View 1 (spheres, rainbow, N blue to C red):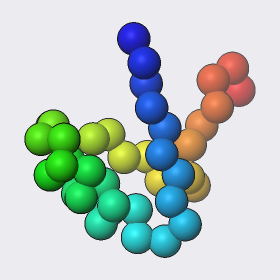
View 2 (cartoon, rainbow, N blue to C red):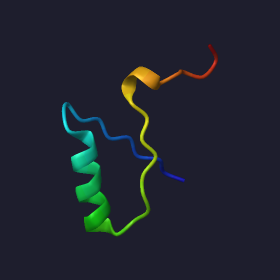
View 3 (cartoon, rainbow, N blue to C red):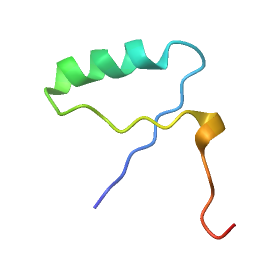
Length: 41
């Protein structure tokens, strides 16, 4: 399985809504950078 990661500088939610409309997919899981917790810590 492929899990893509997109990183945006600015209006990430606007970009995700655009891609969601283009690819007609479900709402993506969004994890703000400040909430990221690496595994193994």
